[in-house]
Amino acid sequence: MSRSPVAIAFFLGVIGLTLLITYWAAKRTQTADEFYTGGGGLGGFKNGLAIAGDFMSAATFLGISGLIYGFGYDGFIYLVSPMVGLCLGLYLIAEPLRNLGRYTVADVASLRLDDRSIRTFSAVASLAICIMYLVAQMVGAGALMQVLLGIPYKYSVLLVGMLMTIYVGFGGMMATTWVQLTKAAILIFGVTVMAVLVLSQFGFSFRELYDQAANVHRLGDELFLPGGLFKDPISLVSISLALVFGLMGLPHILMRLFTVPNARESQRSVLWAAFFIALVNAMIYFVIGYGGIVLLDGQGQYFDAAGQVVGGGNMVAIHLAEVVGGEAFLGFIVAAAFATILAVVSGLTLAGASAVSHDLYAGVFRRGKITAAEEMRVSRLATIALGIAGISLGLLFEKQNIAYLASLVFAISASTMFPLLMLTLRWRPLSTTGALVGGVLGLISSVGLTVLGPAVWVQILGNATPVFPYSNPAIVSMPLAFGSMILVSLLDRGDRAAAERRAFDHLTLQAMFGTRLLR
Amino acid sequence: MNDREARLQRLSEHPDTHEFAKRRARLTLWFPLLLGGVFFSVVLAAGFARPLFGLAFPGNWAAVGTVIAVLFLVLCVVLNAVYMRLYRGRLESLREKILRETEQ
Image (cartoon, rainbow over all chains, first blue to last red; front, side):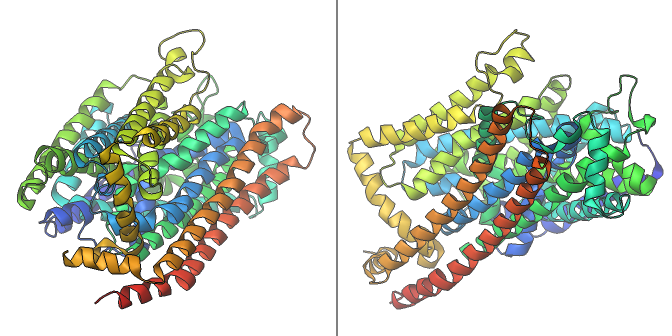
């Protein structure tokens, strides 16, 4: 693929810019509050852009383009699901979370439930989600950089791992925020320009674009009909549940809601994030995906001897960039893809480090008796440890099929963090025992059913048929988590459970009116 | 009783707190139900379309599918705007009033 001077120049430019941002942020990150929240003074618009930058990974830009290219209409699930998840987050979570919490979701849950046990569970679940997501991103980054810039896989993984450790270790949330903001702006600009260039090839006529796509694609008119990717309604519902509700439990997304000064800015953040993500996804879905079908057709240099896209489906948008914009634009898009990876892994590393330093070490191990300086030291050490873990696992999983990991992450989040958060905020009878039983069952069932499903049991372990027939387990694991949390809580008649129910009334007041006003 | 607990008590006893809680609960119930209901209806329709209709789709289904995707995005944007408008109009002013009156 491309080792053009332009691509390399843009690539080095992204690295230089992000390191400059980190240098600037490091001077402003001295306290634990600044490390975890960037000082808490970020406005809704900037935070919304950062949330969009945190969420939109290479899978968003490259993966969805590839899905539309291959399967057409069914890719719309990946377009609208994050939008719905964020909208529901706006209505249900943004305000109370900001009013109640300090740095992590465990801070919120432990306001009414047993501090040590809930903090431990929440931290473990957050860490599992962050690490799995990180592995998926690192493997994707290694493969992408190898194809795009000719950097050998292991050096790509090492480079990404070192950069994310530097951003987070030195600059904390401040550096992470501005890297995500910058990346979001670059991505929105790049995708918009690409969409305009693609549409201009069809006289800015959507009808012309879609007619030609149907003529070229193997699916014909069925390209615009459901059923190309998801063959049965249960699979479609299951992936939808995971994407929508799992997003509302992702630790690196929720953590961003604590970086704003109040609940109003938290809501504005989610509003803007939903807008930016919808904008990018809409351009990918309505223009870029279908544009790739037409404009790559007949361009033999982008297909191998077997007729498959060179580099796989994820390369559709990259090849398209070269077709419509030449070498310069290709270089810019490659740099945008690299920035995308850096922004997401930084957010994941920060969320994981916070789970270790704030929840496990400071909250559980030291029971809150820790100085801010010591907590900062532990945060930085945790960042380094996660960086090493990310690099090591990225190298270990090089040849593995890890496609199931991204799906599993959302299923785990929908079956652990989301039920815990929703019932803590909204349901009076929830008890610690109920929360733990439901959370553990959600975790075990989401992981177990993924292993027993087609993605692992058949494709990786080589069995003929799966034990669990669906790739995404959310349709079972999420109701199981909710159901067991509710049932066990209702059966819990202990004194601790009664006290936790009384604590719900205070928590609700604080969620409505804001705890910072009351301190 | 410390200041924080005293403030919480005044908040819980304020005559408008119950009304505030009711309005907030209504807003945060109906919007998610509406959006979630529409979304999962679209998902179920898309999921069952092929098993029910097989390959014999009516000719204009292609346009319908694309229009549904566009309309859904518009719905999300409109719902968010309406929600924020209602939140600011019906909740924020009442919240500020309660906080002011319970300050001392």
